[in-house]
Length: 334
Image (cartoon, rainbow, N blue to C red; front, side, top):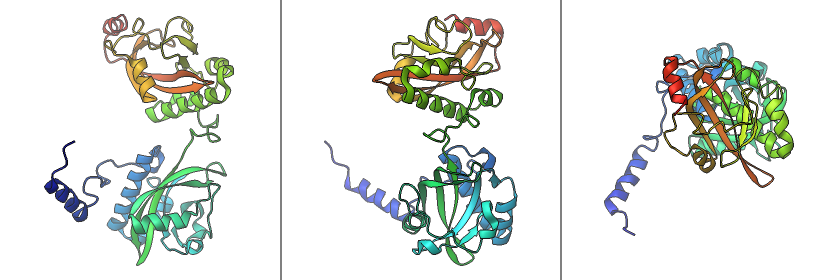
């Protein structure tokens, strides 16, 4: 195998010393976001960067007020916090803490979670050694009153002369023990569809199938949590044969992803893609059983091995047709 040229290695090393964040640094202008829209790890990272820039734009006192009061920075369990970075993890001072403003200026004490993480020790390690990064831990969710898995992105900042970390975290709602029916269900997805909510919905259903196996099929197909309006789940084997389906239109005939019933895949083996990648978004035309019309559909599919059998479980939501009916029907007959 050909060895890399020494000049190339020298250039890469020089680049890393001169500007280690040159290729990865995010700015708020790249992708601004508000607290109420934070759903993913990237969202949390972006809002952290926005908050970091905001502090430098308006100063400490206005930033503290805004982080505690303005909807841009605070929404339900999502908020911006600022805490001291110190090796004395039981004494880390809170500079901004919206869930309990009365704790600002004091410390939460030693925070060791169910995984054995000493939060402030880990915060000190990442902030002092790397400048920024993710921390994974369990923390009290103010929206539910329960400790839940949380991933937080922190970034080093000077807060009124004190070494500190500014950060935003996101609670996972599609992990075992966090997939609550009142937060993830078909009715909510039907009323406010998005790729993030769709992904969460299918992952929760996949966990149910994984834990209960074939016994979950009936409830996944017909249960009110998993079926509402045009939202329904389907399960296929890796050959495309229907294992279960909540579709009110011929639920056991053919396959949701069969090239015989839908168009737009142009010969691609989408079942193979879903199987190989483990998770995938698919975009195609399908007949909406709620309207009887051919419409564009966004579907998320996840591969689950249930009692040794691979199953592709998925769901999708329909978009308004952007083409005349005859074009949509032609797409469906391909």
